[in-house]
Image (cartoon, rainbow, N blue to C red; front, top):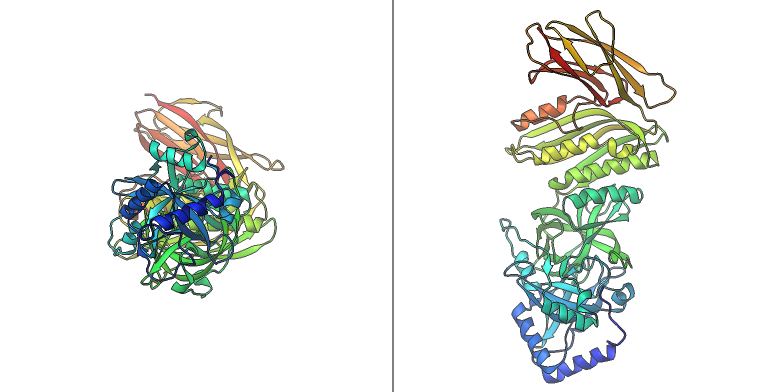
Length: 603
């Protein structure tokens, strides 16, 4: 933890600034005064920063600048930035990170920088003009800290000038060397041991509607597995951006203003909130670090209104904000920040749903418009996940019937379509289990190696949910050879041509229902010579949604359409590594569990 003590008073800082002004009027000046303009800024190079730092060190004073960010509402407030040094070659060779200590009444009140400050511009008044030094972008991973890493403005300007075929930028953890750790320790009157050895990109706070902490936790885990630097926060849905028709202009994005990058609008408005660094020639730079790090992208660019900054001494404070009007598209997501082009339109991808909850009688129509095909799998899953919880008005066990359609275009532009229906049951969380197959199938479609595809929509045609758990568990299988008696066995010896008669006992989860016994017959082929197994199982026989190997995109779609449902009871006889008999029977509710019997074929 890094803490600033009372000994470093504001009077000492004022004296240092005045000293700099008197000694280096043309070289070093006081922090920039007044809010910055919307005009293209003058960019300060990292070499110039190093020269100013060297001059300040030689005179025994500090190099200070002024930054701008929003803690409440939409108007930026200023903060003071003491420039401590430059980390060369971080986060990659040829890159640099400028280390600064930040203070203002708002920053001091919450104990340090907060998530949502990403992109906050910092200026230095040098050579008689305000020059943009860089954007707040990095912080120590845990806890509150006044120390931040700034992405140099020159690196952000390079991203602003990218064409549509620009190569992918990169970023990584920033290594804080021993010399810089000593500098930070001295500036904050802390021990070197208290200063972390790495800094990471500040987490982007993302406000989404969430039915309580359990739903947000489930979604957060899915994002964390993808390596996204995102912190999900409770939020509200809304018709922000393209859904409402309310638009913003470049003048609504002054340096230091709130900036929201949206992946979806509607019932699920999924947007990360950071800060605008600057605007220039119809484009804006924000965040100072990646959002999803996708390179070329297409997200919504929106204004935002900050409600407040929530203090959090453990994980770091964060800005609570709502998404506002739309202003074009974010088309670059790079290591030095995200770029908005105010002239680029969005092409929304519809996600629609009809959800009926039997326990409450609520029937709900839902709609969310996604902005990026690559993130439609997560957006669609989370949209319907929240729809189920909302209509059931509880977080519980239960069962469901689901019918969904996924559409897209192939590499050559021709359309494709997958429609699938199934049932689900869970003794713990039906909202998650009902979407388990959809989740695995849509991600399999996205990651398949056969050809590039683009999603054009997801429709949950009908989802019915209830709190009752309608599920069978396969508990026992008895086997009879030809006309012999039934026995519960793990091993059967039989001659070719023998009929194996089976009785499978299904135990219902509902206590008021009696067991169900299913009868059928499996025949060992007359020419069979090799041993094998007889497997009796409920459901598809493999992890739901993970269909078998395919050799083409068409074959994969076929396997998904024809995969066994969860309410299927099956037997599969495999001899010599080949399937010799496969029988299925549809039941009136989901079936789980399996039994395996060894089969020895004798002469």
